[in-house]
Each structure stands twice: as structure tokens, then as C-alpha cells.
Length: 343
Ligand SMILES: [Mn+2]
Image 1 (tube, helix red, strand yellow):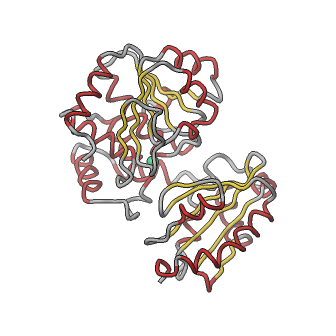
Image 2: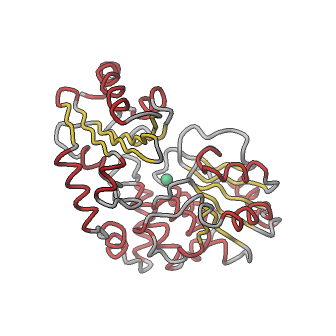
């Protein structure tokens, strides 16, 4: 239980003393960063007059349907407005990220701000000292679940309306692969059950998020699986890579490669999957694994990254071929060192 009475009292005091509240979340928004931001926004707006959402960049199109989405101001698009809001803020929420480095170019605004800061997050190893009040629980599947638990701890579950409910549910399903990851607990299902009992149209939300493929996206996915999937059968590993040129060929939009790595992981006999994506001149790498295989070690030790045990990210500064050969060289050792996890 991270929402202790003592910490909720501190939370209440910080909120009461703040005139202007800004909600931030990590770069490259996903269903949980947007979902938790909107859920908190809808919730706080009921008791607090001045709440804004400032994100480093814009969310992929499959999240634009969300109620209140237009409230999210992207630093990338409205730098002056975000700068002003961050400067004027008395209280800043840091949602779904564990260190200031995760908000891209907004990190400077956060560092310079004199506002009080509250973190609500579920990533491991939160950085010390950049917030005044920290709610961090790596055991929880999503930040959206933590927003629900915050409302619960403040006896405000009756304030869950349609907007809040859909935002929380979006975070839950996108961060858990639709309730399949090991991070899902009875509590996660209890929350879903409560939201559905309250009238949430869960199947519509699922369709809004997952059934929004464009023709180009399906073709890009098909190309990636047909031409770019490599299965290293004896090491129970599969990987996919996409260069910038390959993405351009299919006019890839933000979010179009989302979930690709999970398709590689879905192969029978494969316990670890990696996706290499050329982006902004570097190679961004997504790692996924099953059971206890710690891909965050791989990401942290070799690819300047980190994250969760089963879902991590990293990067390689250089060419695609060099990123892949580095990985292929490391792979046998990693599997050997983690032998027991691969059995
Ligand atoms: Mn999350």
C-alpha cells in the first residue's frame, strides 16, 4: 500500500496550496501516460480550477479519441505555452516516469520550476530528489491503476465519471497487453470490474485502440514479419529491425510499429524478442521477454536503457547493422548467464 494516510495528507496539503497545477508525463506518449494524465486531469478538475496537461510530444493517432485529449498540450508543438505553464505552476505532477530524463526537452523546465512536485509512477529504480512527494510502485501494472488507487485512498471513487473511467481503462489495457502480463493482479481486475459495473463500454475502448489499422500499417507489419523477422531458435530469441527507409516506404506514422515486438514474442519456443527501429538518427531498441528473463539487465548493461523485467527499452548510437551485430554478439552470453530463466 503506497497511498498511506500520512502521504495522502501531504498530497492534500500540496494540492490545497497550489493555484496552478500542471500534469506531465513521459516522452513518446502511450496509453498509460495519456490515460493516467487524463484520468488525473478529469479528477482534479472537479476540485481544482486550474489544471493543465503538458507532454513533451503528441500521442499516436490511436489515442486521439480519448475524452479530453485536446487538453494535452505538446511541448514539441506549443513550446511557448508549455514553457509559460511550467514557469507559472505551483504544483507539477510527474506521471508514468521515474527520472527527469524521460521528459525530453521539458527536463530543463522541470528543473528550473519552483513548483512542488509529485511523482506517481510504476517504473523501477525511481531517481531520488527530483520530487517532493513520491508514489512509486513497480509492482503495479500501470500508472492508471495508481490514479484509481489514489482516488480510492481519498474516498473519491464516486467521482469516477465516464471520462475518468475510460482514461483509467485505457492505461490498464495498454500497459498490460489487455490483461495478459504478469503485472496484472486481482486488484487490476477488480478495478476493471468496477469501471464496467459503472457503465464503461470496454469493447468500444478496445476497438478504438486496437482496431485502427491503416492499410500502410498492415503492410508495414506484414513486411516486417515476412522479410525482417529473424528467429534464433537455439537461443529462444527472435528479433525484427526496421530502418528509416523501410518505414518511409510504408509511410509509417507514430505508433505504427507499436506491438510488433510482441508478435515476435508470440512465437512458440521464443522467450525473448527485440525490435530495432531506426529513428531520429539512432537505433531505438525494445526488449520483451516472458517469465523471469530480465531484459532490463540487457537494456541497462549494453544499450543505455532500462525498464521493466519483461519490457525494456534502450538505444544504440550508430548504424542498424552495427546495433544488430552488437546484440547478436552479446546474446549467447546473456542466455548462458540467465540459463535458469530460459528453461
Ligand atoms: Mn506505464
